[in-house]
Length: 104
Image (cartoon, rainbow, N blue to C red; front, side):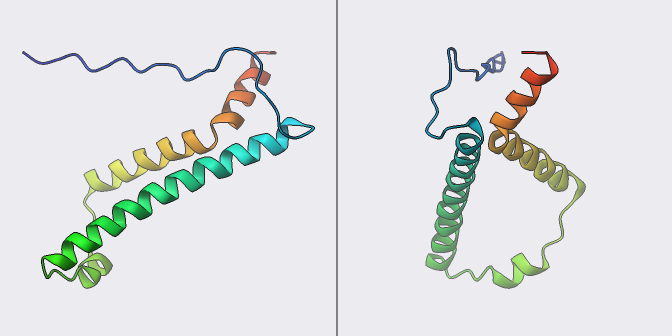
């Protein structure tokens, strides 16, 4: 018997957003930079782990990585991951655009 996939919760904070700068633009960009920095550090940590594990096993990956050919499924996964990253990084801009579109 398979489990139902978990429900995805909407990530919208209630109440007014606190601001550090006089206008919301600075805060929006600070949030985007923070999201990008977090994503980069997680990616760097994972890459470092892969490199260390491979090196400990005597595997040199540089040539394989440089010459690797992706299949269509892998390219589709990458495109999906890029969109998810963009959605996280541009979350506040997308949220503001949605509010502007709905007149709020």
